[in-house]
Length: 246
Image (tube, rainbow, N blue to C red; front, side):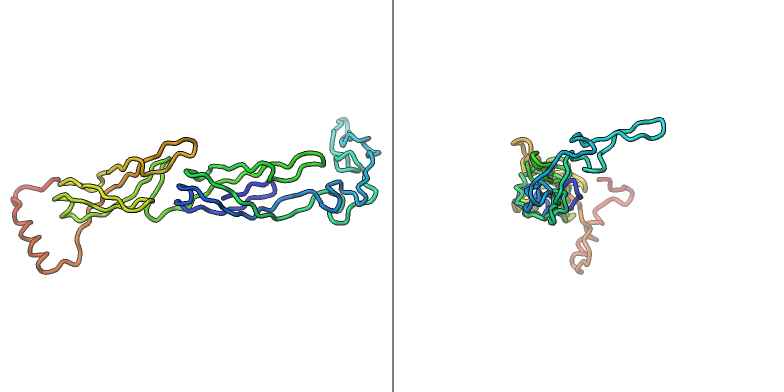
């Protein structure tokens, strides 16, 4: 989760399960708030007067050769006000930096780049104006089993070559527990099996994506003597002059 506050960015990542099912997260956010000692006025006695330089406009016109440039008033820093007794806590700025902890409810189905808006949790504005908003941007970690494309999930499932040839049932993982698929006889590496509704819920609707499992036929290793004998017998059933083309 990236906390975009206007003063800088912070990153707190989400696991895929948290992004898919939703989660409540507590985040520490550096922000700017109105000074409590002067109520955001910048004045120790909370009294201000109109700036004598800009007459309250906050802008002045400066000559640059033949050009005239409008800029922020150097006396009041653009506020249009003068302070006789600056607040010691904020040094007359009216705002101070502070870190606060917020609870963010992240909806189900978010993906990297999605944002959650927290109204009024951004920086404090000038005196008399509301606070800005905080936008929390999602960063989802890579998963060791699943990859994601939109609302669909993908995974690879290894199967024995004998099961691929003869067919049978295979247990596959999902984010909600194991499921079972039926692999037909003579299945080849790369075949996709689709489990409808086992993907990710759309963050902007009620639709669910699918889970697509790609099977990978494994070559057996560390064969026993009996297994080797059976494979040699099986190999001998093919005609010597004909290549076996699945």
